[in-house]
Length: 173
Image (cartoon, rainbow, N blue to C red; front, top):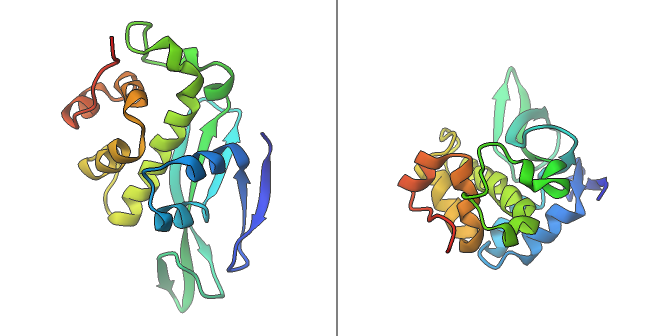
């Protein structure tokens, strides 16, 4: 489960985690182009409370597929990343906001998969519209497409109003 350094085609080095790469590889809803894009981001599992998807600007010298910005004659590249908290593997019952009534216990071993796909949906959201933020319509369009339907109910423990308005169904009885 260790994060390992990967050198990308453009020579940029990122930390990546095999468990997250496996979820990308095995997801039947992601297109080949999306998988290729997602495999270029930093993706780590860390011992922290919350996960995160984001980007930062890095000074870049060579060609790249990322968004670029020119500041004062220097080219900066938008490099995306996701961070997944380790507890999503070790103790998914500890997810804040979820009560036993909110989720199907038989699916708890797949909570990590849900969490990864949630963060990847944020990355896809930014690739579609760089100005879009948060748990918007664009985010939920990607989330409901790439996350298996049986795992989507975990979202109701995190963003109940947004998820419900986006059509995310509760757990199956």
